Length: 326
Image (cartoon, rainbow, N blue to C red):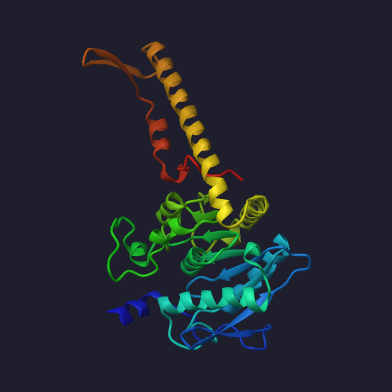
């Protein structure tokens, strides 16, 4: 079952989209004794370095062109790598292999590139969200960016599933709450590959979440094509935000108390607003679509603005009460 399931999940390009001569390649060995290629993109005077994990159905060759443009615009360095069984990497694709790849890539940045954890931002797209969340749980990093992330593999085909099956893979929905660094999530509301509900569920469970970027007409493979400027602008805001945040354990400890106060203030503000709106409704006339009925000896006025009710239920307008605005 496991091998058959893995065959359905992983879709590496065949043949690979690149050769060893296309761009500089560094070979890294994993704890599973497999080797995989990575490439380092360097920008002058860059402070942050992205640890980039690409999506399914693509390899290192597909990611390098886009990543070079992104590094140039954001003025960051980047390390991109291939998963086991993808591109020129050896071995067969597996969940454990992906985790071993990202762990080895992280250690390469720390030990070989001498890049401190406070300058590392983990960036994962689609399937790459799984190794990105995994390494952000295990190791200290400055920030986490997830584009079209999945909550788990089974939930991709069964979005309304509320339980985790024993054979499920990449169960990000249980790991995301362990991530202590700031998290930015970008997802298209019309994504037909990884439903938008995945990004929303992960956002709800984030410990330290900034305001996400929900792209109303965005799909799965067209975000960078049609919404690149909007996404790049949000990335810049995210970088400006996290550089001002404390790093490591102090980040969570110092951020906990202010966030609780912020949440209470927001809750008090909403309660006051609801009270004022309720008073306005009670004092309004019957005109304007307001119906009146008696219940338990008290007068209730019920607004019948159906359009307002529908808009309030549109789930892609959801925003966490304690989401950090950047």
